[in-house]
Image 1 (cartoon, one colour):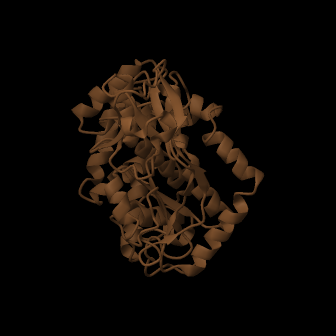
Image 2: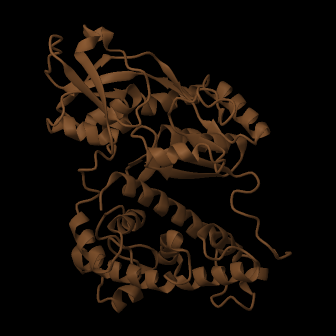
Image 3: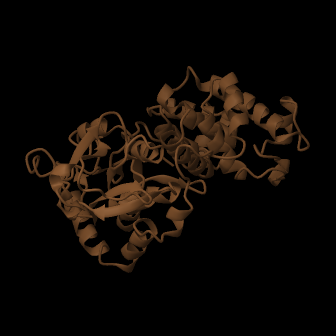
Length: 421
């Protein structure tokens, strides 16, 4: 096998790089897996086009808006009025779905049309609202609140800090199951299309994406996707992760305390634990791995725990071990990627990750960031690489660890967006 002399840049070639603005229906965590309407739609696009997909999530609407014009991404899933910017600044896709604005109220609220009512929306809510269906439209005023997102407004409505909010239908049916005191009010606007922003310099890919959308929205698979995420009867919506007020698990307090002690993000540790045990205690795995952290016996002994230790002790020991892995890489990788290296080390042991980093460095890759190092970790299953003089730990089938890291970090990013520190 001919060794690589220089690594191609990330995002080069056939990879589809996408950005999704965090939205209750488009991206969330369900039973430990990251899913959502646009998340699944873009992944299906990649699968049908036989292209790997990299998806970033953004929670700040202003940053998402600016990134929509930056040409960093092949696909941007963000709803805003694109008509003012075409065709000079952005390329807009065919519609991937439609929605409309609805009023959200507390249950048993009577729509008194004789007094002035203030209807709240996030600052970035840009779709036309028509209050004429509610009676005299002059008695209804739309107020856009700075610094809040739609879920914040749902919390405020439930807490009786506001009396009315406006929300797009698809987002409303996703959030309402977690706010039992709230109800879906009347429609207050026309249908509008939801579209993607496409890379303005990639006409060929854009034509392929648009053709795929035109064909895919006519399929039974698309209908099932809409039923899964855009229907009030959706089983997933009824049983998804809930609001930011909910816990990730019944062990959150242990993880928060332990991670605070070792300066770690407790949501990262939660994602590791879900990946290892789904928060199930008492498990014994292959090779004797045990408990909620699925530590190997030798590692557990180093931190003073065994399969008979309490869950709290296992979590504290796990935090110490994750802190140890973190310290290995803290000055060796870019800080934005360090949890990728820690997750990989938790799965494979740090030696194989350090080997992959050395290979990456030797053959001209970006050894400070995970995507390039991950490629060389997978190459450690080939003799030309695992026998290289810079390799200290020998053969390793790295594909499993790369997939492990992707799942852990996808879930972690979902926890970061939906659960407060």
